[in-house]
Amino acid sequence: MQTSTIERFLQTLNHLSVNTRSAYQRDLGFLVSFCSREGITTWRALEAGHVRAFVSWRHRQGIGGRSLQRNLSAIRAFYKFLLDEGIVTHNPAEEIFAPKTPRKLPKALDVDQTARLVEIDSADPLAQRDRAILELMYSSGLRLSELVTLDVDEVDLDDAMVSVLGKGNKRRYVPVGRYAIEALKRWLPVRATLAGSPEEALFVSRRGQRLGARAVQERLRLWAIRQGLAVHVHPHMLRHSFASHLLESSGDLRAVQELLGHADISTTQVYTHLDFQHLAKVYDAAHPRARKKKTQ
Image (cartoon, rainbow, N blue to C red; front, side):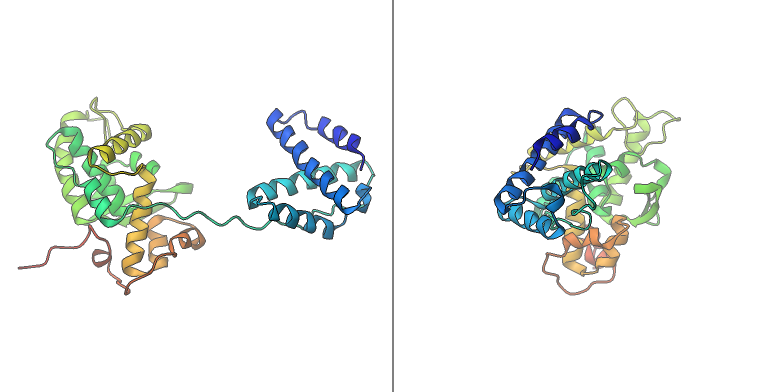
């Protein structure tokens, strides 16, 4: 194998970052090692079967799907260069794909941990706000970005619904549980004392301005500590908990997909590792903090 050809190829990548060029160099170095091991002496001699064997060889070394995909991207780009140079007649990596990396299961709090986190018992104005934030995020499975962009008029307390502008500017309507409704009713009068008339944000800072994402992250971190949780809690964990707990009770993957605002149900399927209980079609019956009080 002529490594000088790789050097000429790398010189065509000056528009890329140093780290990217170094990654290409490493990836092609692995290919050179494989070819030497297999007795492949020219770039023209490398076939699709060899590339598949290269991927298997790297995979047996413990290399994950993402790294293998990057290896293949480097090989494809290199062979495109070789084609342009007239050194080869085909790209052997064109139709080769890396094995998929198993999707990591999202971390979720259990029901007891979640209840401990959200049940903030304080008359402090910011504590009232924070409880409303946590209850709403868990009740409705909101993304952090969706929460901080909410305006007051997008929450309908009478109908217990929230209008959410999600990814791709797609709007969806999500039920709001009883506990979250109660927390919002306590927060709104407090909000009125903080926010001026032009401010439309549902959640505001002490200065009356729209609360930012970083502020929510920090407040959640502090409350997790104060409430005695021995795990690092971040806003998306409440969304994971919402989905996991709802699926545990209902098993209705399609409904949870709609509630989360996932365009593709395969995104929601990451939660299906759970052992589902009996199907419960009604939201109030499925969500731990949306159940209505029994009449006496």
